[in-house]
Length: 257
Image (tube, rainbow, N blue to C red):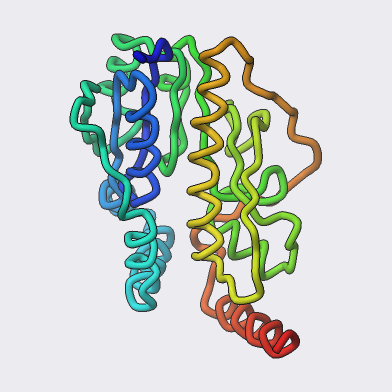
């Protein structure tokens, strides 16, 4: 059965971003899919001479490669396949806030725009569509905003704040009203990466279910964020945090063995 819900996707190029695109394209009428690659985000930092941010961006890319985290994520989402009959307009851009994206959203006029992993949207993009914009955030809002949210929640031993959040996008950073949380099962051997992947997959399935319900006439849930959280930047996760986290991880393993 053809879908009546027209969706635009703004994403980056991580495996779970592709998985989200594939899941939505398999079920709904995806009219546009825009990819802002991570390499483009890094190039923009270099061009703007934001050397400190660029350093930590490259540091974490190297850390993920050396410890096999990028490969783990790739294998976890390796089953994702884009449907062969997808007719969406698909483009790759250097900047998610460029005029090409604004014009594409205006032309396609999606009912819903879903974003994941992109740079922060500016007003021109936010105002390019009349429909709501939804973000799949890798962290438990409102407590953990920004980047590395699973890591810092585990470091803080905030085990009730481990999960992803589907939320409406406003002009702030991860501050829009909450639609749903996706909280994965947790075991003592879990790491930030294993939990992140499991929560991301759960959030994708939850989002598809919510959009199916919306298509049938049930409005999306909406809950205002209450309480202050902290916004973590890429540069906030440093080597001494890694050491402290793995000490705590080893102690937890010993306590239950």
